[in-house]
Structures are given as C-alpha cells and as structure tokens.
Picture 1 (cartoon, rainbow, N blue to C red):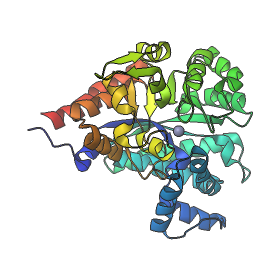
Picture 2 (spheres, helix red, strand yellow; picture 1 turned 135 degrees about the vertical axis):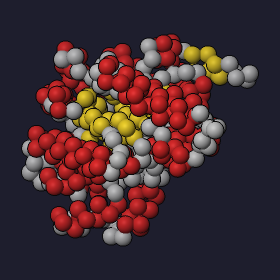
Picture 3 (cartoon, rainbow, N blue to C red; picture 1 turned 60 degrees about the vertical axis):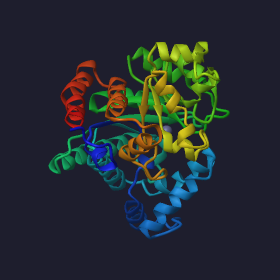
Length: 362
Ligand SMILES: [Zn+2]
C-alpha cells in the first residue's frame, strides 16, 4: 500500500538540500544562549518562542534588504570558535533529524571575524562542527553528509581570497563556492577574477542570481562567470511566455538553462518573504517543474522562513498535489546537481534515495 504523503511521512523520506545558509538556520534557543555567553545585548527578545516569531515577522516584510537585516543578530552571536562549532553541529543534527541525507550548507567566512578569528580559524571551526554533528546524527540513527560552500559577499572585495580558501579546503569537505548579498548594483561580473581562478582550478561554484533581480543577472552568472548552478534563478520565468491554452514558449536564455540542465536552487518559502512570488500557488516552481527544468527544492534560511525540507515538500504537496514520484524527482535532481564526484552522487541516488522512496510507494 502506498504511504500517504504527510508531513511525518515526508520526514522519513530521504531528502537532499543544496541551498541552506548556516547563519539562517540557528535554533532560537541557541541564539539566546550564544548571546548570553558573549555578552551580546542587541537581541529583541530573550524568550525562544518570541524570538522565533520575531525572526519570522521581520523576514516577512517583503523586501530582500529587510530580510538580510535579521542576519545581524545571528551573525552577531557567531563570532567565536565555540559558537561556530555549536551552530554547525546543530545544523547537521537538525537536517539529519528532518531526513536530509546530503546537504550543502553555505556561509561567508569573512562575516565571522569580528571576535578576532582568522579566516582559516573560521573555516576550521565550522568544519569541526559539521563533523561533530554528523557523528551525533549517526548515533541518533540518522546518517547525513554535509558539504560546505564558502560564500563571498557581493558588496565586499574579497571574492578572490575566498575562492582560494575554498580550493585550499576542497579535500576537507568544502565542495564549492558562491556569491551572496544584495543583487541590485552588484552584478556577478564584478568578481570575474574569482570565477576564472575557480575554473582554472576545476572547482565548483554556484551564484545567487535571479532572485530579486531579473534575467541580466542570470545571463551574466552563466555566460560570463560560468556558474554551474543558479542560487534561486527563479526569475528565469521572465523568459518564458505562457499562452492562453497553457503552451509555453521559451526564450533563448530559458532554453539554454533547460537544455544544459542548469540546476535551479529554488527556495519557495524564502521567495514569498522577499516578494519574489505573491503566493506558493503562483510561485514559478509549478511552471518550471512542469517544463522539466532541473528544479531543486531548498530551504534557504530555516530560522527566518520557519521551514525545513519536510515543510517545504509538504507545502508543495498541498499546493500542487505533488506525490512521492515528484518528491523523488526533486530529490534525484538535487543529488545529480551536488558538487560531489559522479560516483558519490550515483551511490546516494541508487543506495539511499531510490530504495527510500520505493519503500513509501509500494
Ligand atoms: Zn540564499
């Protein structure tokens, strides 16, 4: 008998997450504990439930700039080694408990140096935390592997340094690089040197593009910078015309993205908060999945969006009627698009994802 698709059963299904920010996924109580330990007095609330609501409400304002403001508090309490280890370990535990079997978690090391940590110390602390979290998750019966993406901030001028850092740690589970921060006024081509360096090093990278900003940023990310994946990329729908009868006509850029199977790291709940879509029913994920783009589903910031992979899948099931075969498709899409070796990706698909969904679908 087919298992009904419900939040609890979705939690038991293997899931893959490619777009999740370390500083956007803290447990509310951890923010409070770390603030107390570090003497950080800026928090708007010291009760976990009230603080969780505050993050959600502030992030709900409808603008990307306001949304990014909530990060001043999470980043503010992550300025020492112990805090970074704890946040990373809990991230791995929380994702594993949600049934995520492979995740790529990203952060910008340069944001965590206010307490005097060197950039290497930041990376080592986070990597130690992920390994600790993987061990704890395994003890709890949930196996997960975390790959790290190091981000450079668009508005700063440290992209080449961060790219070198990512390459330096590539044999220690740092699997790629990303550029994050406000899109308007900071086109990805500002950091061309970093992308050219990464390509010469045969290294992997994704670029936040086409979230709040339109097609030119997607085009630059792919055709100038050479991004393998698009962080969000949701505005690619601006290059798709849908007729009265539902037939879709793709422009040249949308065709290119689909033809080359360029993965879209879509983050539905986050997009609703930043105003990229008015409601989940109107979110372009429905159209993009129907047109068989390489769609992946992601959380972006679990604290600010009050979501998890399971809650995203459950909301998509409710809104679009997606069943197990669709949820498996999103999951296989994500694993195919991971910045791991081909043999490792295949092993997760064949040994974990397919048998996991087969159990639910028989
Ligand atoms: Zn993001």
